[in-house]
Image (spheres, rainbow, N blue to C red):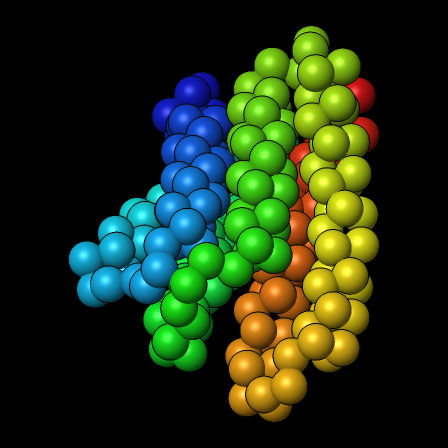
Length: 208
């Protein structure tokens, strides 16, 4: 009888869906940022709002985790999934903030290409996360995880290519430092997306 009165899942699936959607919103914001000649304060605030909303959802997940007795999957996986999704959003926010601080002007074709891959990865991450709600459709869920892993490999190759070109063609050392950091941050977003689906994969194995 006692267990009837304990909270069960704390609506975790809805919260993870929201967090995944904010990750996609952040990726869309990045696509817009790299297509601009410069980033203004209004646009920075738009990204900050997304990051803030993502933080709020992450905090709510942890708060519910601390109050919920029976969870839909392992507590450590819930914590890890919330953290990794939040890290995706935070890293995109970091890229946009650095573009502003470093006064990156003009449209950089490499950043445009990175933003497209990040967007595709964020969409696949969202599909994987939302697939946790119904484990019957493991094929679709697995396909999304595979796609994120593929895009991370694409990002690795892109990073090596653009850094090679940067060191070869760019003569201003300050510009090299700025762009090198931003390119590496862009590839890091794809690494974190892969970390998200690693957690998803762990959940799938445990729930099988």
